[in-house]
Image 1 (cartoon, rainbow, N blue to C red):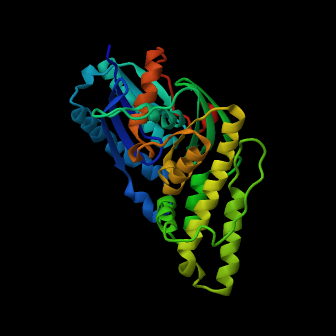
Image 2: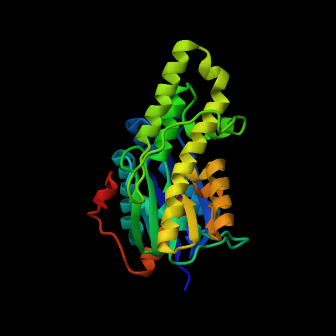
Image 3: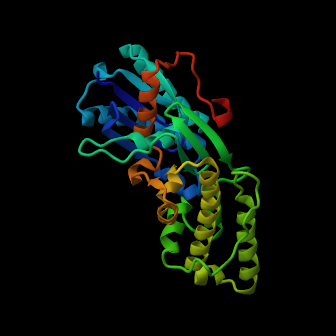
Length: 340
């Protein structure tokens, strides 16, 4: 029997709704918020207000594009966390209202697990490659950097995580120092293609196990700029491409070093990446090359599934629905991963 899921995502600054029938994507609508660009980062209050304005038209558009009515939904999957509480509250509250009005069960989803399970979405015109179980997923987003062992859609173990800054934060904070616009990661990626990745050397952390650290790299980058700009005020402008290329190369090397080690020690050779930073061309090329040399099967998400989107939430909700894991009306959003 077909299962039709409406997914709702509102964890940060993108309001998204999607419809899946089983694991086939019927629609995926995203409303982004340009208001944060001038502030150099997401302003939580502005984000939650924008979600309130966007969520009804976004859900309506997703249902119309999928060609279905709300009465045909088997469940509504929503992001419970982690994320900005005010933003999450909009999605959770809307889901509760629609659930009560149409008597549709609710399924709560861990946003990060949604990123991982985006690898199991298929498109109406073609099936996408899916990793086999178990697989390792390098999850890299603005606020999280993790290596996750995935034994099944509902069995995941974080075997490595950042102990301070995430990779996405390192990109954005270093970009801000260079005067680049927000979000900084895509801008660094573009400029890095024009620079020399060996022009500068920055600190590599020494952290036990599979855990990551990026605060030392960020500090090393800042000190390099401080000393260089003191001698030449135009240093950043003259060397912007090389700085971006060297920074990006260092971050990718740090990410892949731990991933290679995890693959060797676990014996797992199906390797995936997910999250916003998985759109980075250097990381995509790096993991592809590492897979070629090491005999991995590598899985790289389509660009539309790298950023926050409701398709991945619906996909995760589909697996929870099949196990009768439903949420109750007293569910509340949570900001931190540890609270889920």
